[in-house]
Length: 137
Image (tube, rainbow, N blue to C red):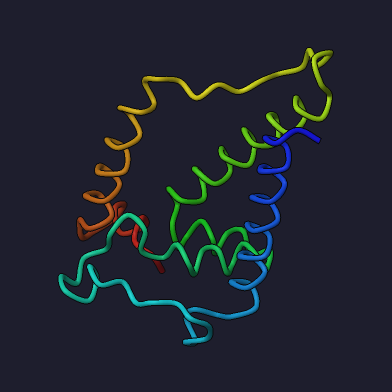
Protein backbone atom coordinates (compact mmCIF):
# COMPACT_ATOMS: atom_id res chain seq x y z
CA UNK A 1 0.00 0.00 0.00
CA UNK A 2 1.39 3.38 -0.99
CA UNK A 3 2.02 6.11 1.56
CA UNK A 4 -0.44 8.53 -0.08
CA UNK A 5 -3.21 5.91 -0.08
CA UNK A 6 -2.58 5.20 3.61
CA UNK A 7 -2.75 8.91 4.43
CA UNK A 8 -5.99 9.20 2.45
CA UNK A 9 -7.53 6.24 4.29
CA UNK A 10 -6.52 7.62 7.69
CA UNK A 11 -7.97 11.02 6.75
CA UNK A 12 -11.22 9.40 5.58
CA UNK A 13 -11.47 7.38 8.80
CA UNK A 14 -10.93 10.52 10.91
CA UNK A 15 -13.61 12.35 8.92
CA UNK A 16 -16.04 9.48 9.50
CA UNK A 17 -15.27 9.45 13.23
CA UNK A 18 -15.75 13.22 13.42
CA UNK A 19 -19.03 13.04 11.54
CA UNK A 20 -20.21 10.22 13.82
CA UNK A 21 -19.40 12.35 16.89
CA UNK A 22 -21.23 15.37 15.49
CA UNK A 23 -24.16 13.14 14.52
CA UNK A 24 -24.43 11.73 18.03
CA UNK A 25 -24.19 15.09 19.85
CA UNK A 26 -26.68 17.80 18.90
CA UNK A 27 -24.92 21.20 18.91
CA UNK A 28 -28.28 23.03 19.14
CA UNK A 29 -29.08 21.25 22.40
CA UNK A 30 -25.66 21.98 23.89
CA UNK A 31 -24.49 18.40 23.49
CA UNK A 32 -20.83 17.67 22.88
CA UNK A 33 -17.76 19.87 23.02
CA UNK A 34 -18.83 22.46 20.46
CA UNK A 35 -17.69 26.05 21.03
CA UNK A 36 -19.99 28.98 20.38
CA UNK A 37 -19.20 31.32 17.47
CA UNK A 38 -17.17 34.16 18.95
CA UNK A 39 -17.81 36.38 15.92
CA UNK A 40 -21.59 35.97 16.22
CA UNK A 41 -21.50 36.52 19.99
CA UNK A 42 -19.50 39.74 19.56
CA UNK A 43 -21.29 41.24 16.54
CA UNK A 44 -24.67 39.50 16.20
CA UNK A 45 -23.68 38.86 12.55
CA UNK A 46 -23.19 35.48 10.94
CA UNK A 47 -19.73 34.42 9.83
CA UNK A 48 -19.34 32.11 6.78
CA UNK A 49 -19.08 29.12 9.12
CA UNK A 50 -22.09 29.88 11.31
CA UNK A 51 -24.45 26.92 11.20
CA UNK A 52 -21.72 24.59 9.98
CA UNK A 53 -21.76 22.32 13.02
CA UNK A 54 -25.54 22.15 13.00
CA UNK A 55 -25.38 21.41 9.26
CA UNK A 56 -22.91 18.57 9.87
CA UNK A 57 -25.21 17.20 12.61
CA UNK A 58 -28.19 17.30 10.25
CA UNK A 59 -26.15 15.69 7.46
CA UNK A 60 -24.95 12.92 9.78
CA UNK A 61 -28.57 12.21 10.64
CA UNK A 62 -29.61 12.22 6.93
CA UNK A 63 -31.60 15.47 7.13
CA UNK A 64 -30.18 16.94 3.92
CA UNK A 65 -32.65 19.83 3.58
CA UNK A 66 -31.94 21.01 7.12
CA UNK A 67 -28.20 20.80 6.47
CA UNK A 68 -28.56 23.08 3.44
CA UNK A 69 -30.70 25.53 5.47
CA UNK A 70 -28.02 25.76 8.15
CA UNK A 71 -25.07 26.54 5.85
CA UNK A 72 -25.61 26.41 2.10
CA UNK A 73 -22.02 27.20 1.12
CA UNK A 74 -20.53 24.58 3.42
CA UNK A 75 -22.81 21.87 2.04
CA UNK A 76 -21.98 22.77 -1.57
CA UNK A 77 -18.25 22.79 -0.83
CA UNK A 78 -18.53 19.51 1.12
CA UNK A 79 -20.32 17.85 -1.81
CA UNK A 80 -17.61 19.03 -4.21
CA UNK A 81 -14.90 17.82 -1.84
CA UNK A 82 -16.48 14.37 -1.47
CA UNK A 83 -16.90 14.11 -5.25
CA UNK A 84 -13.26 15.11 -5.89
CA UNK A 85 -11.95 12.82 -3.13
CA UNK A 86 -14.01 9.94 -4.51
CA UNK A 87 -12.57 10.42 -7.99
CA UNK A 88 -9.04 10.58 -6.57
CA UNK A 89 -9.62 7.44 -4.50
CA UNK A 90 -11.01 5.60 -7.52
CA UNK A 91 -7.97 6.59 -9.57
CA UNK A 92 -5.55 5.53 -6.82
CA UNK A 93 -7.25 2.18 -6.26
CA UNK A 94 -7.37 1.44 -9.99
CA UNK A 95 -3.71 2.19 -10.51
CA UNK A 96 -2.07 3.36 -13.72
CA UNK A 97 -4.67 1.66 -15.89
CA UNK A 98 -7.40 4.08 -14.71
CA UNK A 99 -8.92 6.00 -17.64
CA UNK A 100 -12.05 7.43 -15.96
CA UNK A 101 -12.81 11.00 -14.94
CA UNK A 102 -10.32 12.82 -12.78
CA UNK A 103 -10.28 15.98 -10.72
CA UNK A 104 -7.68 18.71 -10.63
CA UNK A 105 -8.15 21.75 -8.44
CA UNK A 106 -8.07 24.69 -10.87
CA UNK A 107 -5.59 27.43 -10.01
CA UNK A 108 -8.24 30.10 -10.62
CA UNK A 109 -10.31 28.56 -7.82
CA UNK A 110 -7.61 29.59 -5.35
CA UNK A 111 -8.52 33.20 -6.16
CA UNK A 112 -12.23 32.67 -6.78
CA UNK A 113 -13.12 30.69 -3.64
CA UNK A 114 -12.13 33.38 -1.11
CA UNK A 115 -14.24 35.88 -3.05
CA UNK A 116 -17.22 33.50 -2.94
CA UNK A 117 -16.77 33.06 0.83
CA UNK A 118 -16.63 36.82 1.45
CA UNK A 119 -19.65 37.40 -0.80
CA UNK A 120 -21.56 34.67 1.05
CA UNK A 121 -20.54 36.29 4.37
CA UNK A 122 -21.89 39.67 3.27
CA UNK A 123 -25.09 38.40 1.65
CA UNK A 124 -26.15 36.21 4.58
CA UNK A 125 -26.11 39.28 6.85
CA UNK A 126 -28.37 41.47 4.69
CA UNK A 127 -31.81 41.62 6.28
CA UNK A 128 -34.81 40.74 4.14
CA UNK A 129 -35.76 38.25 1.53
CA UNK A 130 -33.98 36.48 -0.26
CA UNK A 131 -30.77 37.06 1.68
CA UNK A 132 -32.24 35.88 4.97
CA UNK A 133 -32.47 32.42 3.38
CA UNK A 134 -28.66 32.24 3.59
CA UNK A 135 -28.65 32.76 7.38
CA UNK A 136 -28.72 29.63 9.56
CA UNK A 137 -32.29 28.70 10.50
